[in-house]
Image 1 (spheres, rainbow, N blue to C red):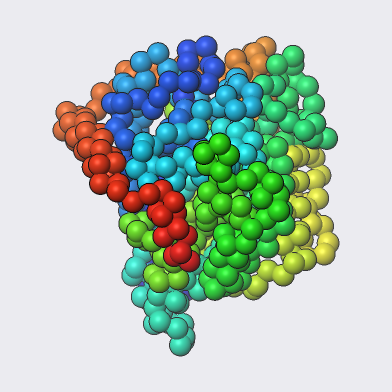
Image 2: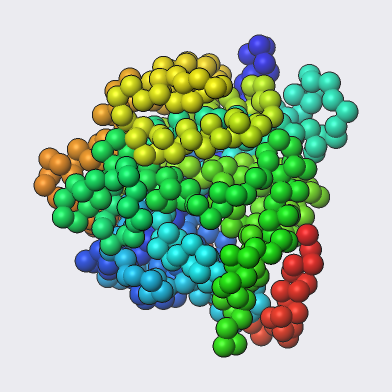
Length: 509
C-alpha cells in the first residue's frame, strides 16, 4: 500500500453501531415495565430491539460510509426513544444501576411465535448459566467492513489461489488475530467502568476496594466490564476456539454448540413444563460465545451464523470491547470511531501469524491485567515470553496506527487527531475515561451510583429537548407499527410446535 492513490481506497468502509443501555426509573432503579409499545416490536424492529433483559434496549444503526451518518442515526434513535420513555431514563454507564437480586431481573419478552420463544428461552438459559446480573452490563459494539474497492485492489496485488470470498475471509481472520493482540490498548484507552454500585454481585475480586459506602472500585482499573467481574466469564474459560482460520473458528464453534456439558446437564432443559435453556451444550447457540471481536456473515442472512459464515464468508467485523462512554450522550463519539477504524485497518494490513496456546495465554493475561489495573504506574504486560511496560508498547503501537490514520485523513477528517489524543492518554493515565470518572466521583463527593444517575438525567434532558425532522419521526412511527404487525403475523402463522421448531433449527449446523 505504498502508492498513496491505492491507499486512499481504504477510505469509505461501512460502519455501524449497536448500543445497549438499561432502562431505569427516575430514582435509578432497574425498570420493571415492558418494552415501550411506541418503540414497536423488539423481535422484528430493525433498529430498536432489546438485549438480555426487557429493561435493556439496544439501538442499532444501519451500516454507513461515514462516521457522521452513523452517529446522526444513533442520535435520532435516542431522540425517538426519549420521547417514549415517559418517567424513565437510559442508564449512562456500562456497569448497571441498582439492580434487584437473583431472578428479579426481567428477561426480554418477544411474544408467542417460535422465533420469539427461542430468544426468550436462550436468555433464560444465560441466567441459569451465568446469573442474570451479569447480563445487565451494557456496551457498544462497532461493526466495520473495509471497502470493496480495497479488497479488489488487494486481490490483484497479492498472489492467491483463493476465491475473492475466501481471500477476504482469510484477511479478516488475520485482522481478528491482530486485534486480539492489541485489544488491551482499547481496554486501556476507552475503558470507562472502573467502579460499580454495591448492588451488583461480586465474588470478592482481589483488585477491588471500597471507594465509599455504596461503591466498589479498582484503584487503577479501566474496564471492570471486560474483567472477570464482567464479561471475562469463568464458565467459558475452557473454550479453545481458534481464530487461526475461518475453518478453525467454525470447527470450534460447532463443537461448542453441539457438545453437551455436564455443568449444564445439571440445570436441565425442561422443568415443570417450562424451558430452562435451549439445550445442555457448552454454548446454546453461537451468540453465547463472549469474544471481544467476532467475524460476521451478511447481516440479512437467514441461516445460523456458522452456516452463513461457511456459505458466504466473513462480511464484516464486530468489535465488542467498548464500554459506554458516559461522558458522551450517545455513549460513543466520532473520535473513538475514527481510532477504532484506524486500528482495525492496521490489524488488517499487517502480517498476522497464527496464535498458539502460549500466546493466547499471554493475550488473556494482558487483557485481564489492563482491565483490572491498566493505570498502575509502570505496569508490565507479557509479550513474547517477556514483559514490556504498557506505556512503551502503547506508544509503539500508536505510532504505527498513526500512519494508517494519515491515509484516512485526506480531507482532514480527524483521524490523525484521534490517534494523537490517545498518545496523550498513553503518556498520562489521568486523561483516560476511567481516571476521569473516578476523579468526578472524588471531587464531587458523589457515589458511582449518584454520578451515573445525574449523568443519565442530564442526557435524557438533552435528547428530550431535541426534535426529529417530521419526515424522520413519521418514518420511525411507521417502522414501529409495521414491526408490531410483523410480529402479529409471525404469531398467527406459527402452526409448528416449538419442539419441532427447535429440532429443525438445531439440525442446521
